[in-house]
Image 1 (tube, helix red, strand yellow):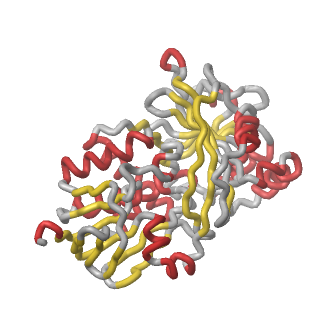
Image 2 (cartoon, one colour):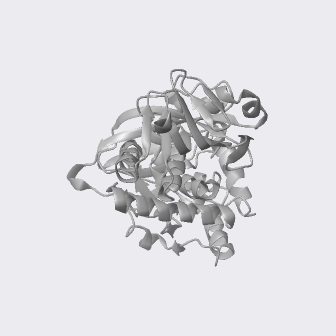
Image 3 (cartoon, rainbow, N blue to C red):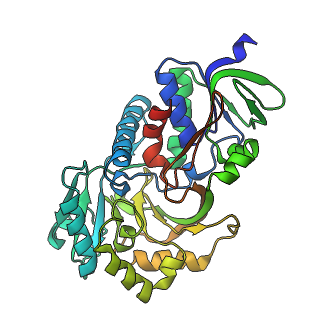
Length: 373
């Protein structure tokens, strides 16, 4: 039984669980991680691979995002994970969007963002993909980074196991948890602290807490091109006016109201399906595109070609690629906690639930894990 005693047990090998495992193992604690699937297959590998601090509001959340970024760089250096510090561009094609960027730049001075307003002629130096016709200007942010999610998540697991001695049990669904004890039905383990970082286990092990948490589900649709030819480089990750409506870093700006009103009048389907478009490029040279946001308990298991068409329609207003043909589409589902960016609660003595990062898991998990561990 001694071999089954740990300082920390983590349920879930997505980015939240791996971040918690890293924070604990770095302190010299003996850590075990359980994952019900043979490998991580959820939202942690179904995303842009973007670390996006510029989307977080000034204060505690921006500080957490920037600390997460520091830890990502630390992990990448130690493990050899591909991580590109390529920054981001917010592009403006309407005067009202440019007004939002100006107000953000004015109001955020000294908050910790690393942004700079750009004239149209300056934008192209950051990315060759930007559509120049109608461009009013943009905002460069230096803090955003890109990883290849489908590779990075298993690579972090391997790094934790090899270099920090974290024990992994893949294909092991935890069926019972109480203070200091957990089981997958066949075997029992002991741990001083247990962290439930998987939405599936949270929902089934603590259904009352889950139901009363206010968490709902968000389905997003995404697309990927083939590798771009001749080592073509996107440069900065891209977004445009719709993204100003999505991230809370801009939500306090009064100049945002005309932007929202115009999009709701001209293209109400963007709002209906929660569409804003981000563009990233992974280590294979593939362009990752998306996404949509459909909230509720009864999210459809089927993807909508109409939603994908809307994503591509908006993409074409601000970006062009040498090889735009779509090679793959998919959807992901993540927990959403309205009005909050995390759900951290002690379910019973020594058992902590860490969930509800609301689509910002890649950006926030390492910083949050350092706080909760």
